[in-house]
Length: 186
Image (tube, rainbow, N blue to C red):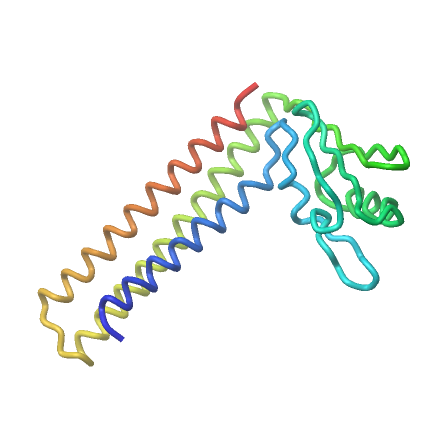
């Protein structure tokens, strides 16, 4: 393994950390209907846990309502039960053909709680990126011994790792800032 291989692996891991943070933030309700809030809801479909979005067409109506239209009409009740049991905590309206989830506007106190959650998720992402940096720096140090790298080559590798860390930390800060604005928007 070379220093370049370590850099490539480090960047790949950091991209995955960013994707994970984006996924976590996507599940945070912002007062607007967003089909992503159903990503963690699974329904028992003939013995197999299946995500709702794979079993139904999910669309946004008038910005505040999610409309869930199952491909298999017989699963309407099962989907309703799964959503009711989930941590979404939204009332489900069943009209016999589709399910509707009305997403109420958030009050100020709830918005502030959600902003704290967003910041916590962002901080966890930064910790993950710093851990990736630590591991990569350690790997470069190990290369120094096994591959007889010079001090300058090790220093250059560590500088490149730090630049990657700075780049992805800035991306995280931007994601957190955008999500905070979205949550606080009335």
